[in-house]
Length: 336
Ligand code: SF4
Image 1 (cartoon, rainbow, N blue to C red):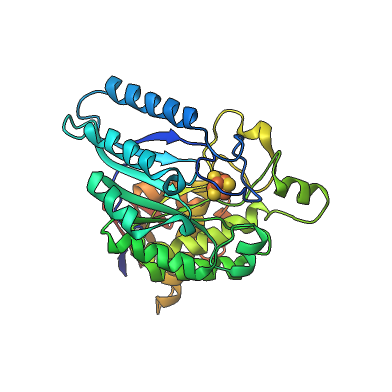
Image 2 (tube, protein in one colour):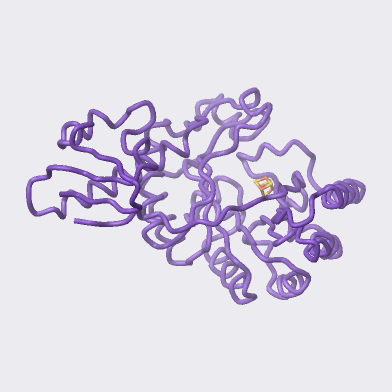
């Protein structure tokens, strides 16, 4: 039996991140660790604008950046500022410094008419912080919108021919694996171009941290998180959806402010290994004769055995060992 890896082809993104902490946020979500106070003063937006202008002037020609406005609710900052930021980034398209502009925002802050104007100015991608479609989970996390708002926000993005991104937050209060996998199914139905998966972590100075200290919230264990996200990742891949991030990046100060939760610097690899494990188990089940050998593309060899060989025992029990697994340079798998 010959088959390909289920991950859709990816294109390399070169992101120039522009952080706008808490900009445009009308309330504070329980897990949010943005440190800036509610609302963003005009002076802060001016400073961010000057920072971006400088960064783009300093960039090499043909750098091919996608300028990304992250860390707040971009489409809820004053509209004049939204336009100014997108127009500034687009000015650098001619020199090849910028090849796209993306922003992250909340589903309840999306307005189709405004998206149309931003698209005309050069906006290419809108990443919606959906987090979950489950109304109970959304309400506990003080997200203040419902599944209906998510669907209409996705439709508004697509109606304006913008690329749609969806961010999910598995492990929020009130969520279990079943709800998460249901969130993945609903995401597949909305056909975003890209997805990011951020397992819920507890950071200092958040409402979630106080719930955690009082014993009112327990984050998912790392193993459970890897298992749930592995299944979810495989479903997304099999629907042709690219997953461009798994877990928060390990930035300076992250571990100092982390209180609890399934953080691991290699969580992306762990989840990919789990997805590959689920995929190969599916394939093995369809093989109608005894299994004798697996030929696999060299680049997946590490993922097959798992982080620090975590799956060696699992595969050993199913007949996969260093003598029955051969890596080769072809981009396909062969199971005999
Ligand atoms: S919308 Fe995003 S940035 Fe704003 S408070 Fe919620 S999680 Fe934080």
